[in-house]
Amino acid sequence: MNREKLSKDDATTAVFGSEQMLQSAPTEFIPQHKTTPEIAYQMVKEETYPQTQPRLNLATFVTTYMDDYATRLMNEAINVNYIDETEYPRVAVMCGRCINILANLWHSPEKAQWKAGAVGIGSSEACMLGGVAAWLRWRERRKAQGKPYDKPNLVMSSAYQVVWEKFCQLWQIELRTVPVSFDKPTLDVKKALEICDENTICIVPIAGVTWTGLNDNVEELDRELDAYNRKTGYEIPIHVDAASGGFILPFLKPEEKWDFRLKWVLSISTSGHKYGLVYPGLGWTVWRDKKYLPGDMSFSVNYLGANITQVGLNFSRPAAQILGQYYNFIRLGFDGYREIQQSSMDVAQYCHDEIGKMKCFRNYADKLVNPLFIWYMDPEYDKTAKWTLYDLQATLQQSGWMVPAYTLPKNLENIVVMRIVARQGMSRDMADMLLSDIRNAVAEFETLQYPTQSRLKYEKQEHQLGKVFTH
Image (cartoon, rainbow, N blue to C red; front, side, top):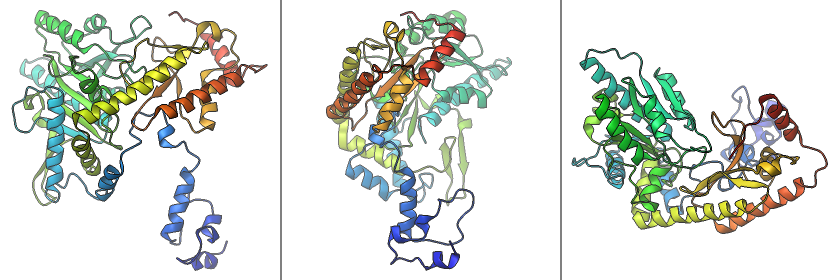
């Protein structure tokens, strides 16, 4: 296509009558010539067209629906950089208010007007901030005691989210894990304490395990850890990774103690863009008191027109998500959040019950504690099946659904499961459509005369590794 023809396209040219729409999208080099915004928009839009629609993506924990006013408010702030507090001081105030609200939701004992906390791009940054604070506090104690501080470790279950592996790798901290099992699918507190020592910077229980949807027992951990710390003289704290549970437990299980009501819980992280109901990316970290937030984590600059001090791994960050979070707090209130989270829980429970009735499946846990769950192939059915859950994932994807199939973490890595995450925007009607598609897919699989490629691969691996499956 010659350049002269390309350059003749202008605002009067129909999008699909343009020469650009006959070209491949740029892959290696920036195009030589400019184009109209309508055509550029359509070219980018075309790339995303075949993808799963966000609300049908039941793999993600991330918010895929906000009301029109929230979306409008965030769009109007899309060009605002939160870090420029001198230009946008009210955004900083709203951020502080969000931290206060979360701290009090989690029963913070801090009496200061502004609670100790930080905003993050997501729960990954929020986790890292909690981890860094624990590491710095431990290091300072070791220095003060004249002891070596070159071999820190962190303890949690093997069902951790990958951010903790990243954190330990980047900060050169040994990650000590307690394997999960069918008998003990959450953190085994006694085994966790057995692998602690004077170099343990913290123990990290999870409220809303990504792999399974279950919660570690933070209250039990705090009780046993208190006795352990008294016996050893250590001061091992707890950081709660509440990426999902931080916005579920306060509304649906307010009586459950997992937060700052417990003595050794010094910090909590959560994801505003998961069950905080805000579009990505947004995370929050809150400390029990300012004294647990090391001064070394605060950095100041004066090149933005004033002296700006902030806590975070990232400097520039969007203000829109902070506005979205504050809007939700005002718009929904405690009752609104409770209603939405309960609705998500009810839809998840419905799907859990219906899938549990199918002879080919077995639910991993009998009871739901968060609006998500996993299931696996019934062992007896699996012996003669000609298909796997990976085939079901692929078939559902043809209808737009994204329901992930994956293997469980260490110690259970030969078990393939599927997961549904119910979020705001998933209705009972959507659940019925999904369940119908699952049933239809299974009925189709049961007519197969020969095993699928996925099944052949699975059986080969099973033969090589040896199958260990008891429940």
